[in-house]
Amino acid sequence: MKAPERFACLYVREFPAQALLRLRPDLRNKPCVVMDGQPPLQQVCSLNGKAHSLGVARGMSQVEIDTFPSVVTLPRVRAEECTAKAALLECAGTFSPRVEDQSSDSAFVCVIDIAGTEKLFGPPDKLAELLLKRVQDLGILARIAISSNFHAAVCLAKGMSSKTSVTVVSAEEQNSALAPLPVAVFNLSAEHAETFSLWGIRTLGMLAALPETELIARMGQEGKRLRQMARGELPHLFLPVQPAFTLEERMELDSPVELLDSLLFVVSVMLEQLILRASARVLALASVTVNLSLEGGASHVRTIRPVLPTNAKQFWIKLLHLDLEAHPPQASILSLRLSAEPGDTSKVQLGLFSPQLPEPMRLDVTMARIRAIVGEDCAGRAVLRDTHRPDDFRMEPFTIPSQPSETASAPPRAAVRQLRPAESVTVTLRSKRPEIFFFREKRYTVEHAYGPWLTSGDWWNQKLWGVEQWDLVARSQDGEQLCCVLVRDLVDSRWEMAALYD
Image (cartoon, rainbow, N blue to C red; front, side, top):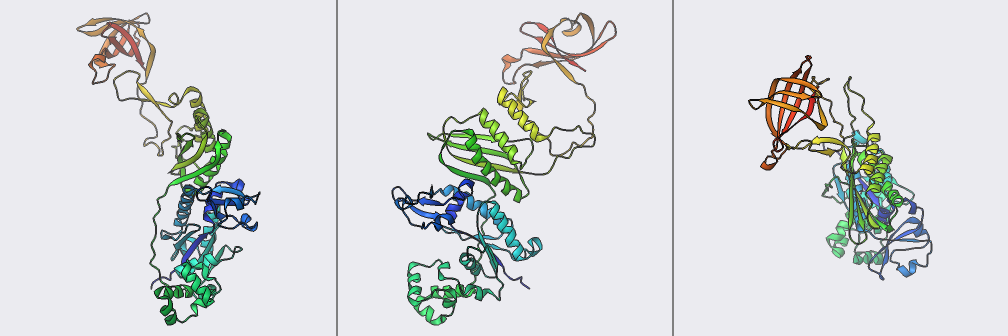
């Protein structure tokens, strides 16, 4: 037996305004409008509730808005709307893989196929409350309607009163719930809207009561489709979208920013959104990249990658603060983009006898402070390069392995103590091999000699093969054994003690 269909519609009114205000918490309690168009022909395309209560309406010009001194005007930013839309679709996708986008230019509308999700999220009203909470955490005010018909759920969400956030309608209550809704919940063309106005059709119940044959004769198949929608009977071919999971936030600044503290205030809000989205998927932020657009068309990009992924907002702000202090932008900032790579939230499992590691967050902050003093490439762990040149290494950031080592304790091995600078020695050769040498006022007789190995050069550059290295086991006159590394400069014919084996 086929499971009954059930759809949840997520509806966000005045989406252009809400997309801007979600990253500007200081403006949420002020009357705000969004202006669209080229100056001086700008018009209000979206506004919040406080501006609406003052009498502001869509389509007003800039001159009309200037008569409201308390209203804050914001330019429309399509990039921020796309980012907010992606975040909402991503949030809806955590409840069902089948999500269809029905958004318009002024509102966000998506429908979620929630049939069969009761075992995961409980009854529909519980799912709706959980979804509404996730959306509100993103800084968005929304309405959610659940019905057994796709189009009925969309109409119920659009026609819901501002005092109601969630409504769940069963199949038996669907017609009575749709009947009082105005026909404006349909995306009617101007011609159809005028026709219904002339006929006196104001609600979906009045439209549903019209005889189907006469309606088709006057309006064609579009009339039949509208009547079926009004009755909650129109079938729908679900077209799910598959948005890519990208942790990214964008923001156009209202005015150029030069102070780092002002920038970090904006970054804090954007980081909070990235952490919320990562936490919803049981992930953490592994790295954060800040892309600053500067005056003059230049850009300033910095990437922060700590030892372990984390969702601690204050920790990320501290790392960004230290990095931007050490590498400040060279001009005023016009806009910024924050992108993050997700990582695993699992903790490091150490062995029973493994030494205690320092706290990763404290280590990252300490290393960031050291790098700010000594330079970016002068702090970290030394890694040998793939070359024969002695003492040739590069610096890499510290990392903590995600898995414990296979053995509890490593087998004993010889340690090498490099002598810096190398100490001069006197060597006696026999058959071109070291036989006797004097080191630190002692005479040593070579018992075993291994070599020579040519060092100090890259394999493609023959001119740099100028050092001959020997590994020796020698014994002094008093019986002391010495394991060492002797090197010979073939150009100057000079012997030196380079390292000692312990």
